[in-house]
Image 1 (spheres, one colour):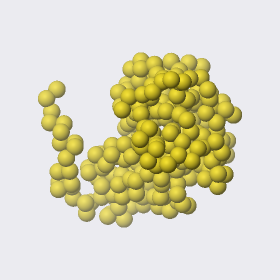
Image 2: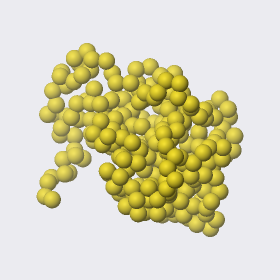
Image 3: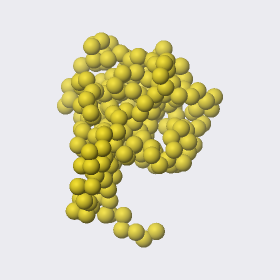
Image 4: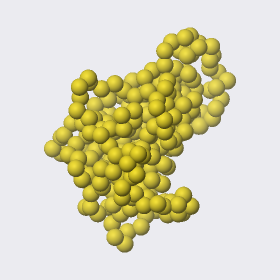
Length: 255
């Protein structure tokens, strides 16, 4: 394959886009802040900022940055629901009531936030094992599925990187490109990738406050991940994942 894929890393595309033709400039309404869910669906509310984050240690930013590692060895201790709520809020939560786009705890190009968060939950106290979707507006979880072989499916979807299914939960991020395309058209795709990096770095730092670790994973089977999460691979598709778990005693990580 001999394409000049370095083009993706450049911003040359911005000079090629006719921004007057974007959906925003044509007066079309912005896509919703998050994917809708069935009316009356049972949601799992999560502890939020107003609850004081029980169990979350007051770690300084300097300490969190200095201790950040990619950690691939986890023990069997579960996360608490409050700790999971903190990690979700830190990586994709809202800082104030949503408007057309919502202000979150991470930056996003044009405040478009074209990502969705899914979780494969293995060991979280008070939460049934299964696949969930995070709803930032409600700060709640929506149960999607409870496959018996969840660990095996997650591992296979990550090209048999078994550590991806050995933590307490594995975070999956998908993108809904239309949210970004509404404003930026063909200039959307690089910034979607940059946004995913912002999100995962916040997860790394937040893990340091709950005695957990994570490892960003960009090598995955696209079709298997999309099938696992129940997304169509076109209007929405997987872009990143990261397992989270208690760090095994005496086990560090890699930079």
